[in-house]
Length: 214
Image: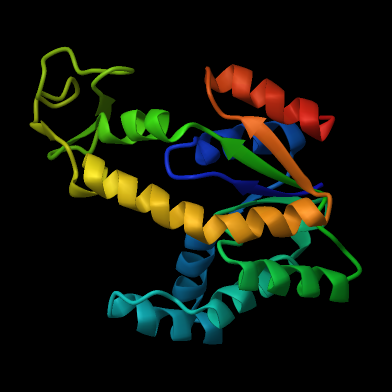
């Protein structure tokens, strides 16, 4: 089964991807993992990607698409995979479709985790991170025992800049603008599976497996 997971920041894609890996026995493919592996291996695409990453620039589509093209032909994904974080744009989606068509393959399902904006803001803006050990807390869902102090090491917990409400709202707005064409693209192909991303992790997982028939 070849799956794509779509969802805004804070929707829980990473958690659900790991649960699907365990259920389906297929690997999770993330662009971040691919980039790190390619850079470490020193492959031509990895060398090119590193030039952008070293100066803090976005790695262009043609490099990302090339990495995905190589990855989906490796032996460990013969039975399928879960794409997390790719495609992000319509151009990437079209490149993926062309790559798979050339291999005689196709995406089976595109799962879109849908969560109301205000809940996403609460999930992300409520996060606190320990400056010492990196432990994560949440003001509502998993607070530390002493406000502002890490349970593990006693370090100070803070709100990261990218978790501030104004930044979160901007990230969500950018995601919506980027992803709407992607959603329409997969909807027209009959591949989109909209899933309510609210509730417990277990309940959301049940909804996903139900639409996948898994």
